[in-house]
Image 1: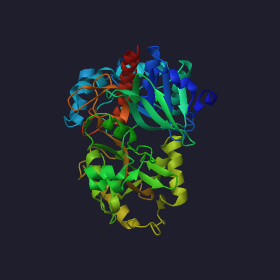
Image 2: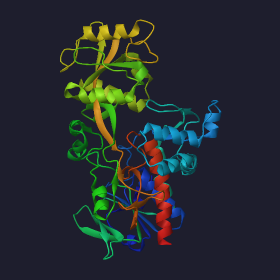
Image 3: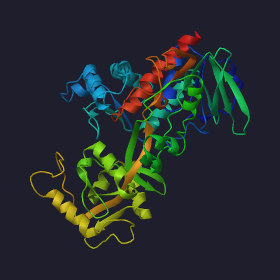
Image 4: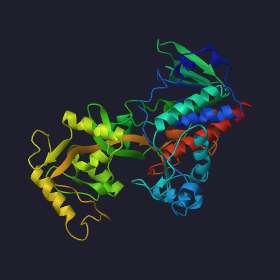
Length: 456
């Protein structure tokens, strides 16, 4: 880790930039690395005071790609065209076909590009819950992978500024974007100028009021982004002339809110059931969209998960630790033959949960349509409340295949590019798990290359 090479606040080294990248998530890092590969002088900045910290970085990265090696070893037949058709269908036909084609046909190139920077992936693919095909590549230690990308950016000559908060775009008299206004930790306003700016500032999942405009039920959900997805970059792009698409589409994630934050549900849907406050099972846990609707409609947006307690020990260390923390604070409970649910507000009785578990395990088929079932040990269960968190927004500024931000008439907002969650048109009404990170890299690369070309 080379924290000393990242600069705090504004630096005079930013004065001669060809490309400014705002936001140091996966999309921003990809854009900065791509622009640097085209020999552009790149400034990458973020409001975080320590971009080398990994506490808020997911331990795993799920990345969809047609990979002849990993899939071929398992006898899986796949193609970019099948990936394209399945992604369009999953989004309800609401995505931009041209963008989806780029996403799917560039996925393998993007995967190998990441590996070239030191991001390590398992040597097999998976079909993860909610996925449409076994083509998900898993980086099981993405925290190390992100550090490798940060170091690669520094090695490529990218000027990295941390603790600098984006405020607005700077436009000239003709409406062209010529840079950004930012604020350092002391509240001083700074202007950075460059022929090309890439916005990778994320979506607006932290803005409860804006999310609730599209569905009033969304406003009360847990903000999984911790206030970081404010939509400020999106609003700035609109002021510069950007057109918005698909802003009524969201990605919601099931998990449990505890003292340490939101713990994403780590169990496969075949290994648990969901019951309501009366202990009755209410939904096919395999049906992702049905689970979302059931949680949105449940009183207090809460259902109760029951699984075999032995499954906790099978979890990877980080995820097991999150469940253990929920158990220690009393949010989750180990329910044995003698343990009841007393003290857990709103929880169903132990007897009703046991009855639901036993009914679930009986008979040749599942009454709610689950394709297969793993028996749950009703003498030793994990029981905990689950709810939804706002994890991502699927709509945003309209872009072309090169990440150029477009107006309502399809014209390019000169000097402005975007990548990642701030953009719209890639997913449609539903994002296939594993496609969010793919989008960040594919269109981060495209935006970085195009921005560097403008400055050449």
